[in-house]
Length: 102
Image 1 (tube, rainbow, N blue to C red):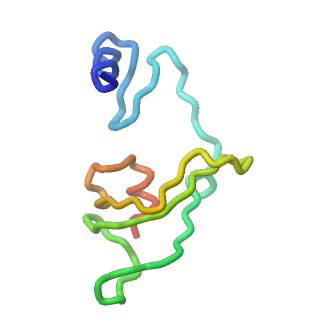
Image 2 (image 1 turned 45 degrees about the vertical axis):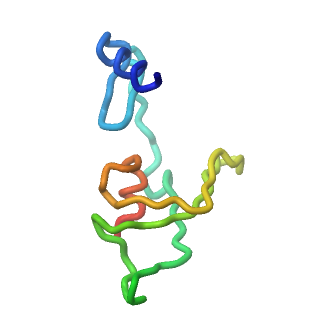
């Protein structure tokens, strides 16, 4: 039902789609004043590979992450003990692919 609602919103011009993102057509575009480094914080706790030598994730690698999503005031809005996906495989939002890559 949700996908159908998004599709209908795009087709009638109420919503605009950019990749996996949607916004209301009448809303102004707000540009974030923070740099990517300030807006997205990723703390790498452990690197892992089959032979123990690989330290950087590459495009196409399967990665597993644990995360806690927090607002600036410390409020937790999301968390996962383990979440796995393929880098740049279209499985997650672009921020995950960009943040974990390399």
